[in-house]
Each structure stands twice: as C-alpha cells, then as structure tokens.
Image (cartoon, rainbow, N blue to C red; front, side):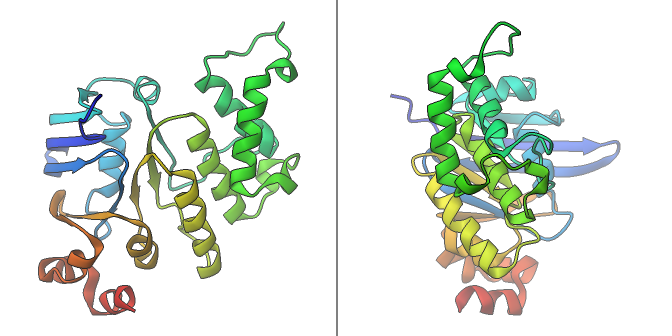
Length: 256
C-alpha cells in the first residue's frame, strides 16, 4: 500500500523573468485530507495550482503526486496519474447538456474515445457513472438543459461534478464558491463535502466561512511562501497569519 502524501511540494520556485513569484514553497498534503490554501491577492496561490496541475513549469524544486515526481509532465498526463482540477472561471461545455458534460468526463476517465461507429447509448458503464454523478450534484431536474443556460451556482456545481467524474482521487478546486451568495456557498460546501468523500481535496478559497467550515488543514501563502500550515483552530490563533492575511474582521468572522 502506498502511504506517500497525495501531494508534496519541495522547495518549489517559479520565476517569470526576473520576478520570483513562488519562493521556496514546501507543503505536504496527506491522502484523504481536505486542505485549503489562503493568502492575500498576489500571494501566488493560483500560480501554485498551475504548477501542481502542469500548466506552468517549475523554475526549480520538485512536486510529487502520490510519491512520484510530476515535474515535466503535461496536464493530461498529470490528470491520468489521478489529479483533476477546476478553475476560477467556469470551464464547461456551454452548448452541451448537463448530462452530456458529465458523460464526456466519464468517457475519457474510463478509456473511451469518440468513434463514428460507437453508439454512446450502448456504453452502460458510462451511463451508470454519469447518472450517479448527476444525482450527486443535485442537477437531475436540469439533465437535458444546455449547461450555458444554468444559473451561475449550478454551473459551478456542474463543474465540480465534471472534475470529480473523471475518477481522480486528488481534486484541486480554484475558488469554488467565488461570486456566490451565502446560501449558495453553503450548498456548494455541502456538495464538495459529499463529492470528495475518500478523496484528497486541495482548494484555493477566499471565503473564510467556507475555509474554516470545510478544511481539515489550512496552508497560508504570503509572497510565494507557505508561512503556516495547521488546523483551522490553530490558524485562527496564529498571530503571524492574522497580521499577514486574516485581519481583525476576518478573524472575528471565522470565530463566530
């Protein structure tokens, strides 16, 4: 059995020209835990996500997925190794129906490829898994609706469904509740909690209510470095974190 962390960053650095954005980041995310990355705007959070998912190449350091280095791999190769991510901007096929979006994700995860001679309706395993994800997302009533016609919160729910439908056991979510009302955020948290049972979750999120309500551990990134990584309770009380990011208002909100 592989007991390696789901994700491990070792002295990760990223430069754009002469500017170093990520400055020796170190982080260990154990398998099966829910981690949140927080930090002020411009701290390098999304850059870290892009490094982990292979969209950016490292300047130096190493990134391991389940004990194996993924440096130099293309995004699709990292996905096939068991990591899937969502984006800050909704990333779905707007003209396809809700069900068709999920079916596409499931097909590729099960090794199917599009073929002129292959009837999609005949793929029972694809249909069963897509139906199960459809039910989990709470979008059964919107099954045949074009994804682009869904309200924003439901588009985000669909994207989370598509991210999970691929079968990856390490899930990256980039600001999954951005732009949502409080009730929509609460529903999204419930959805994320349900759909990541038994999986590893790493998310970037600005809503402190979501972060402190969902994460097992919180990593705080400031100026491209991880300055703290601990339980929500200890992060709340960390003076360096409060000074660097949370501030009095956010601290009081998280403690409420």
